[in-house]
Amino acid sequence: MRIESFREGALLAIDQIRANKFRSGLTILGIVVGVATVMAMSAMIQGIRSSVVDEMEAVGPKNFMVARFNFNDVRLVSHDGPPWGSNPPLTLEEARRIRQLPAIRTTIAAIDLNGEFVYGRQRLSSVTIAGRENGWTNYSNADMIAGHDMLLNDVRAANPVVLLSEPLAETLFGSLDPIGRTLRISGKPFQIIGVFRMSESIFSSLNRNLAIMPYTSAVKHLGTRPEQLSVLTVVAANATQDEAMDQVTTLLRTMRGLRPMDENNFAVIRQEEFLNTFNRITSVFFMVMLALSSVALMVGGVGVIAIMMIAVTERTREIGIRKAIGATRREILWQFLFEAVTVTCIGAIIGMLIGAGVAYLVAAFTPIPASVPFSAIVAALAMAATAGVLFGMWPAWRAARMDPVEALRYE
Image (cartoon, rainbow, N blue to C red; front, top):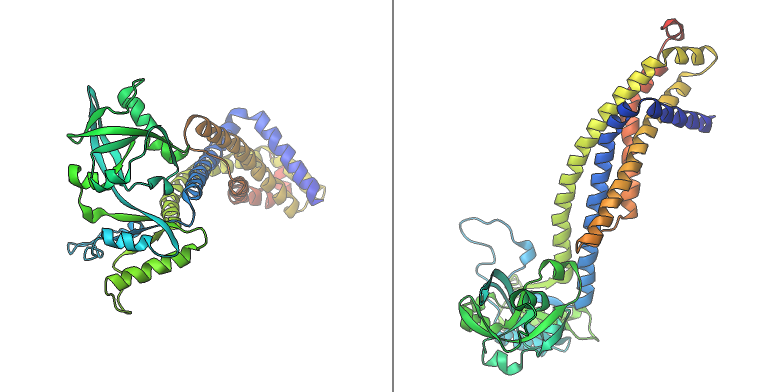
């Protein structure tokens, strides 16, 4: 009997939508907007997250960074300065000693900065520059496609040489061969010795203009402070990440003379921490979009109440007849409640189709591999059904409480 009531309620809801297309369309519009927003946001966040995970896998999931402080824990601080302000910077001697540990395959000294690139009439401001040691490709998913990589002597002598990403070389030189040419970086001349190509990912697409140079050159020619040095650490194949991190921590605490009760005055940063930071940031955006979609659902819910109240009024005699021939209050309540759920679920299905379409367009025309997770589909349907129950309860209760005699007199 309950299944028949559901079926009847769904058919009556569809008939109501057909009979009042404009009114019904406005009613479910809020539901459509809310669900489509949640679906599209979920798809984009899922796509970006999968790119982060893929990038971590590409450069080695066991690798980690040693730095003066943990970038993921940066917070607003008082006038006394940040809590890590008293941490001594990493030194080249510490980086060399870390490389000699049994659990470490190699290390790469790193300094990151920005600079202005000028060649002829071409001028690019704020290009990302990665100061690295030779062997930097052990920590980066990149391949040389022209020229050659920087050499050990380039790092030791702080030679003014630079490697350009393929998009950056095309922007500055077009079809010309950039190898051997000289450009100015923040006013200083640098010779181009190679062009590299990063693996395809959302980050390589968003950060197309990237240059690599010896970190010593960044310090000597561009005035970068050596205190910004960090150490990219590649774990040996026969060692675990925890084992390598323990060895690095023990070494640095010993070299810095820290006592057992002293806190670390350096940071050992897992790649997973960058993923956790990303999740925290995107969760804020997701909550904002969820709040906006909830407003749309509220508007749609008010419309559901309105259309169901109109339906109850228009079908007063029908309700009276059904009660007169034995329909119970529960049956009337379920009928109208299921009509409301049907209306919201139709809006949810349309919203899911629109959200999936937006995700497809984002994946096709942007570097974000957006994909709709199954959990978002379940959440959208559950959200629509819940909205139908909540906003359809009052009209359904009003119909169920209607006096059959008064209903039969209604004209």
